[in-house]
Image 1 (cartoon, helix red, strand yellow):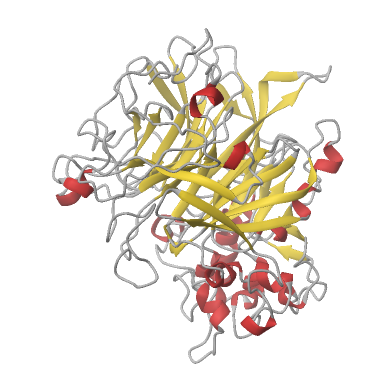
Image 2 (image 1 turned 45 degrees about the vertical axis):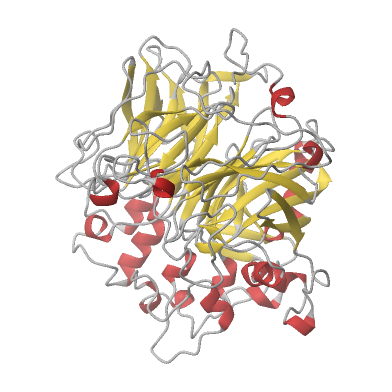
Length: 623
């Protein structure tokens, strides 16, 4: 089935084609998933036909690669925009591996991840096509390259340097006369919102005992954000950055009695080996047991106001946030879909209490302070329910161990388990279609699927010990994102048809030409193209033979057609994607390249980077 497109390659009457619900078709070649049809309200569903034909993409599918470089289709090129250690703030020095903590506080952070581009306005208040502000996450460190001693932090100075390489970088971009973009060093818009910057807690948890510490008796003022993974944007021009694996930075002396709440979020005596807790007391769980409760939130940042204080939005729940995909419902309420990136965790939805007003940005800036949090349950027949996580509802009460709504939000994982939500294969990025109520989510992989009783095989997680991943999609009942019901199916099931058969070969739209594993990053462009980024096994051996380095693909959400667009250098993850408003540049993150990638390395040190991708004829990316 084809979607008609206009001269700008935008879908025409796309909603008419998908109607009110999604059909859950048999996507596994071996037929291991049920092929039952899901429908809501008796409305006939869409039956997606996988086809080689698509009018949504004009570039050629490219082969896999194991080269230490970036591969693109014919007619495309790339340039490195900025790399870890490049100077951002005024007076910051150029990159050097032996830079100090103070140096790093003014430089681009390490391991770029989710990002969003926000165009500035000109003197007449109109959108400026040639000036923008980029907000981009700096997720974590590679100690072997970050420190000259090549190990985890050994001193208090090491900890401060590490803190200053985390968080978010905000930087102004300018388009040059030749059409290429560059970042402006020392711009007044530039900021480093790192692990020592100040943030404000808002919503039901702010000011409660759950988040009070010896350094902040008010429970409202937090220093730092870190392990910022994916991101999202709001229609009022703010950036939503997502705190993911915050647990790894905390630790405690041997014998410290950690609570079940701590353990549910992966907190432990040793952490993930950063050693911060040994040199900075706020990361010592024995001294500051509430400090971890101040992380694991969605953080809203105004990228065009360098004087603003970012807000941690506690009404949206605390878990290992991967990204945040916002859509405005027909009634004006803001709806945000979110994944919790850990094996056996959940997919969530936040619905604002207030409504979006395009003429009142100040009011919109408060929309994420109040709202209702839900968690998803996927049924075998292709239907699903959103279960509310509200104190005194659905068993979330004192009898079951919850004291109040703040407790529910701080321990959102435990609340989701109690209400019977569906455990998922590592829910990562979520993406909302720009003109349809369809929503997609990458489920990266899950070695535990079918191994533990609480993670049975079935529904949207159809394979045991799943190491290839899949992409689930759903549609809310009656196109209403606030509805408690939805229909779902599997858009793509990754696999390796070159070496596997049956379920592990993948779905009908996966072939030896476009195969991949571990879908991770996900976003739609304005024309309805679905861009898929991977963070998987790049050994190119065994079960992964022929799949090469991590990559970025493009999918047609109607036909199911998928083409490979980019392959990254050795060892990297492809993550983060944003477009200029004219879609003539795509910014893509190259995280942790494993070798001295020649276009970003210096003195043998590989550096995480953002690259700008252009069409050589200056046209729209992907069209």
